[in-house]
Image 1 (cartoon, rainbow, N blue to C red):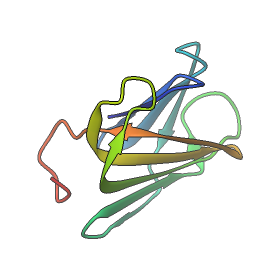
Image 2: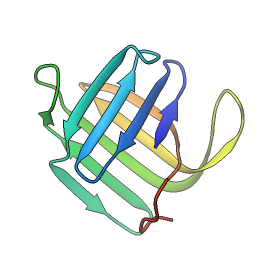
Image 3: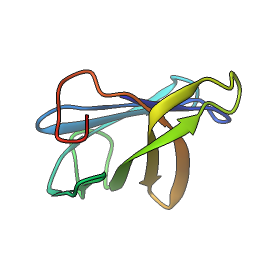
Image 4: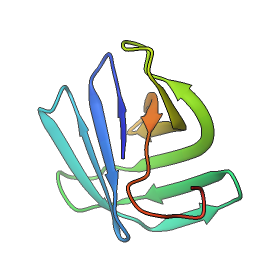
Length: 102
């Protein structure tokens, strides 16, 4: 799970899909994961196959490094970077299940 501020966004990655919510919760795009890369401290997910709303693409990189929420100052164990249709977002991440990065 990832999230960020200004503009507010959130991210959920399942075994098959990427769900990205932006616009402070007003816009939701779902994608089928089409490409992955897993390293020791970095994960990369990509999709050019949207499950909703026209021709869109998304790229998500999750890095195991301490990252702070820019509004609360709270630290989290992962940095999340998202590129969706040429817009770039950076925020914090947590992992809800055991993964190779945890």
